[in-house]
Image (cartoon, rainbow, N blue to C red):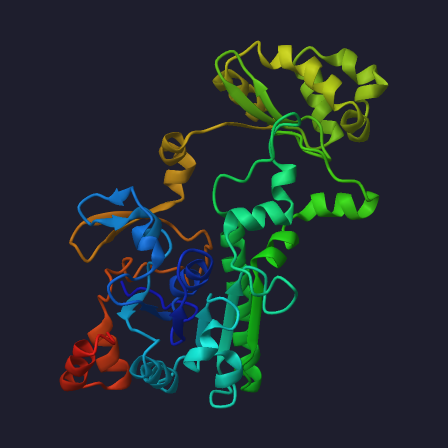
Length: 402
């Protein structure tokens, strides 16, 4: 059976990104069918190739790199050299629709590859820049790091126990969101370009993206002018919506409305709470969240996690175990949804990667190319895309351009 084409089949991306925010954007575009040409420094490559251990067994490739670089062709190229810059221009002339970069603001100008230097020659080009703080503002020249942005953007002030220190999220979420917002911007610009013929610049700042996903907590502040307090695993606007200790571990109990709370109380011998004004509505429970926690803790401690899940699910009351990663990847739902994909690496080894979560019925994500070895596609891309000869390639190798 012929595999359906990706939604972005025929689109070519010139990827000048490294680490995580930019590669997240370009991996998503690659998964959706775009041809992604990843430019890497000769010898060293993307910084994340060295973000290890752990390495994937036998491949000697970092697990970090493998997680953000499938569906890309790796081309080693020194863009600091005039010959390298000339090749970038030949690739752009050769039909690249999109350029994605995450250099510091202004850094590409010294190579003649800034947006302002390319826009006239390539009016259809979509040029996406992902930086820590965007192209404007007093912080624009600063480097951006995930932990730094989490600290400056407020999420650390909201995460952790009330009496504990500020806490960052356990994965680099500021990087990831910036990459995803970058992909959204690219898709919007691509649709506009297809309608008008006009390319444009996309300016993604990690801090901007971070503030955008503060969501209800940001709105809580804007509505009141008061800094939200850290609540551990509790919800600022709903109660009970938190973890509770069980007889053998912990469980998340998520009661999202008053009818569900009433059903919980009537099912587990807590009818008296329904006549107590402090528990009568979600708003009152939020006002009395400590009382709610103290009242329900001994109730939840009476059964094991598995017993609670069985009974709560039967009543259609939100609940779930707090899984470790081995439990996550053994979970029946994760397996049923094929959330892990196997791919054959250039080394010959089979690796596993996390599946793209965007499920499209007609143009599903594809897993065409395993995360590449450094420079794996240099010769084939330069031959097939811009028509370089073996003699030209040999000369570039001697000059250490590729």
